[in-house]
Amino acid sequence: MGGVRFHDKKRVCFFIEKGNSDIFYEQLEQFNDFVKSEWVEQGNKESDFQTLGPKILIILDNASYHKKKDIWEKIENNLPNIQLYFLPAYSPDYNLIELVWHSALIIYSSSIVQISIRFTRTIRGCFKSGGYCKKAHKAYAEICRTQHLVSK
Image (cartoon, rainbow, N blue to C red; front, top):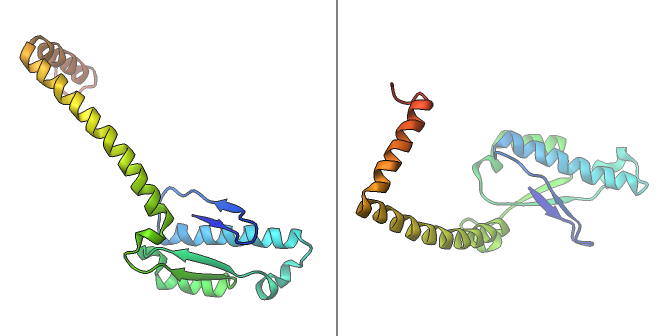
């Protein structure tokens, strides 16, 4: 989860291993605490943050855990400075991560095609010569035996 402050383009990013509603809420709390600490460092009172502090606009995709009612209630009750807005459904052009994934997929898929072609050539060569297949079978059998995948 990440954010960019509009006026000075400062970026904040929290990396998460798994997306679910609990982790989403924890990330919002961290983000809120980060903004609050900056606000207090500027000479403001922490007790005034909820009423006088900046509003934090969060733009979300339509992941189901972003829309859970219990999470929304917790946000409204505990994090009043956070305001959630959703991207239109099926709008990958507005969602930066979708553009990143698309680019990565193009790069990755071209590599896969090249690897696949080399792999196919290697397998065909093994079948034509016969010798490589016997060596590969022996090596595979040895790995299975040492890893206790097959009985001796």
